[in-house]
Length: 160
Image (tube, rainbow, N blue to C red; front, side):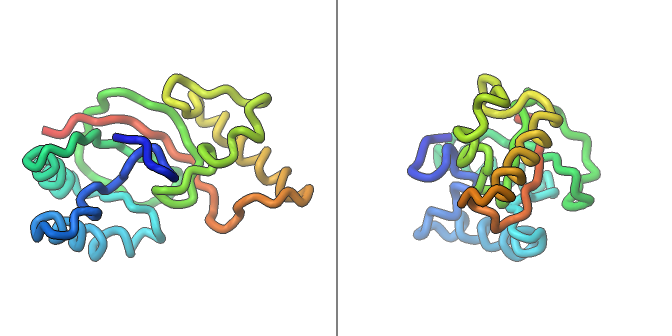
């Protein structure tokens, strides 16, 4: 994971590799099967695909950390048992590359504290943040309000 201009990680690093047919094939598969299906949430419930993606990233020396994203939504879901390595915390997202927390936390830092991962420790804190944002929007503050805010739990997982 690396700091880039507009985000602190690259969720799908193979999509940036243009002259590699395997990277492009894996990216195209993800886009066709999942990314366009889940209303811009770039989340994949197929652990076999994730394993294949991670193995290829390892082959071409891209360091990866696989994250489990849990939402209150009924989809996407996986029926596999997942081994959680570490619970990182909670965020509020619009899409996988748009964290309302990352963009707007500075407006609410006196009300909510973040953990060492710069995420909320509790789901309730994510809900409180959403409520604070809604109140700011009601008072006329000019902040992003395009995507529905989805509270998510983020954990790193072990893929074997």
